[in-house]
Image (cartoon, rainbow, N blue to C red; front, side, top):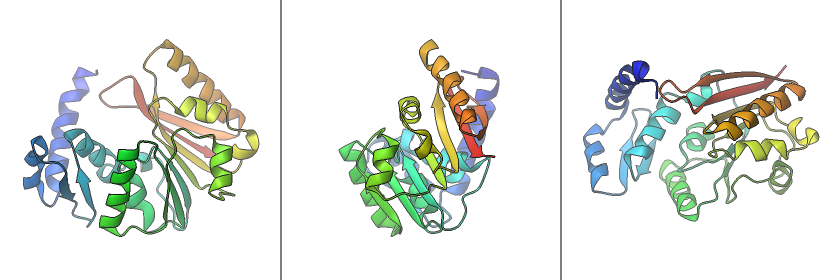
Length: 223
């Protein structure tokens, strides 16, 4: 942990949560009431089960960590690999042409469905799969081109991309992911993945998490 930056980061994050959540009085109820419906000032609502969910919501829906290098365009086709409870997919569903939200955990899939219904989010197809081979996923959900491949699957980003053919990767215009380097093996895979993306003509940028050194955000776009 980066102690020097951790304290100001957490303080500013708490301020952000209190500012951006309309019903912030409900936050303490996460200690003993589940789920708690959290409402953002932009009108989005999410049923959350923990403070970890709340932190994820802050980073994805409020801080827009996956959009810091490039915004989401209109009528994009997006694959959300590791959709979780739906924060990223739902926030971008109203301007997207199609979002395929991939999530393997059955309980989380139900939470995803619930949050989609709460927000009446359009243009989302749920794929109950995990780190699926991209070729099979694209074939099943008829994805001939992908404007954005968003990945957050706790280390499974490496086999997902290493098993993808060049033909499949050519269909992807932009990749944004949370990368993980928990040990030496994953650090080597991270280096190998960057080399692969560059070989496939992506320009790669990445940034460590402001608090932790073992993960961060990577952005790759075609030249």
